[in-house]
Image 1: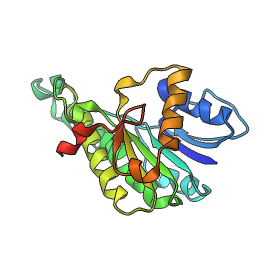
Image 2: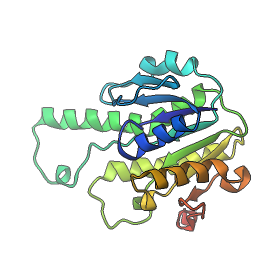
Image 3: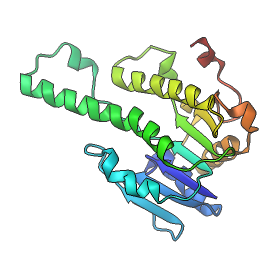
Length: 214
């Protein structure tokens, strides 16, 4: 079984990577962190701040048929202070350039990957989403929330093609420990594909119906 993990070089994502390796998967990883060595791990070291399509095309084209794809990368350039602070013009340009790069990493990159790699009808493609999409108690990082919402919309649109099984993950119950990591992997890969496709789920497989308001 082959998995492609994006942004799983530390914390929760690293636990997912390690669990897949421990259970016999061949793992292909795109990350800025490389703390694991394993004969079944094929890592592409990247710099999120300069990453573009040309740097990953050869790697993506060489991948075998994939059974699991997990988008766990996050990026944000805007903070609450950016809206009221006075910046020099050159600093505004730098901010906007970083903002565009974070949008590429968070939104365009997953689209490009799905359009490039080889999937099949049983492949599970999962996005780590956020409850900030429908709970706006904290809007300090407006681009992060917007990117996650667009990830959700991309997932819904891809789910209609039926080339694979596309889903979202509600991260509220996630904890960085082996039990939760195992539960996450076994839940998302063990669910009925027709039930999972196009939905956002909790760790226990229950659908987060809050997303149905969109």
